[in-house]
Image (cartoon, rainbow, N blue to C red; front, side, top):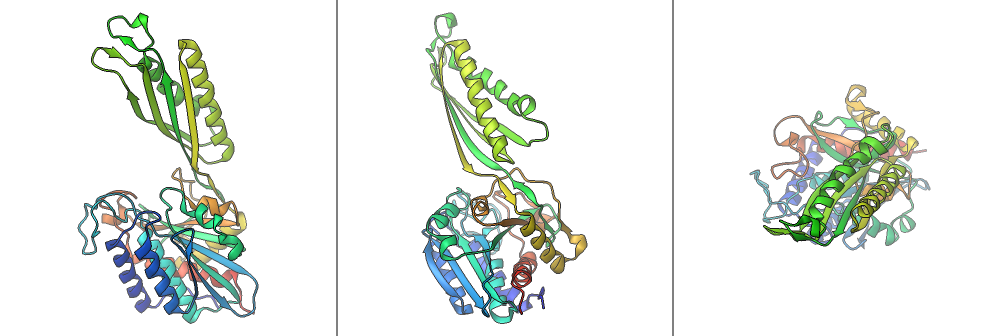
Length: 390
């Protein structure tokens, strides 16, 4: 029998854990207190616990019966380098560091699901609980994978959940196929000759060249990509060595590109390099391009997405689950795991009013404790549905 109800006492415990994590945030690969507390709780629940996976990652394993099927769930633990401006009772105790993305809530929901399944779980097989460090910089998933995550803890599928402000609290949304975008950081260096502001014809003005580049790069999405292929190219920094009456000889453009598929990301990079080469030739300057894809695009596996939706409907009801939401142009480190094991990334509504509706990464954002029960119930229900007891 699938269980979709989490005991009020456990919700109260999750609320306490969440607020404690929020009060004591830690940046990526420095989640020492957080991971120690996670490991302590998992041991109290009776799970097999592995620490130091991918540096500060923690893995808990819960086996029931003799089933060989296994399902994994991931929560992120790291905070952001932001000074909190909100003033909840559980406000960050560390200036310049806060949980502005809800990872405190994600970890607490996964702990709650582990506690529920350890005490009440009706399944046959193995549930794996992954607490990942350093999601924000896109380094934690790879660190855990490189440390043998899915060879030491084989999983038939892996799931993750992220809160999303602006949709009703405790509702769910996901989709099969493209779910979140890749993020690529680019840096374009223009090496010109500079010159005197009164005699521009005697040199080569890196600002003039850079300005043409900024304009041309906007045409990648509007005029190079197929309109059906989503992508974004944004120049976010323009740095030169010019002065009041000195034309700069060097300019650096930095920015961010997003794409919902590897082919689109490849097309953006190729177009960027082609544009830079053309403008360099036109103005007789040198232009170098560095293009680094930090987060790959995340595509939900069709069968995993179907299972995720079925569990969400069991928890929240048909009318509070969107099985075909629009893909999101933000990026997620879980994409690395989704390229190793069939996966699904689920969104849970954080709410539409007050702090719950404030954007992720806002300095006055706060996770909505009212959704902890639904989040833990989704994980527990999905585990029982996928690991059917004989």
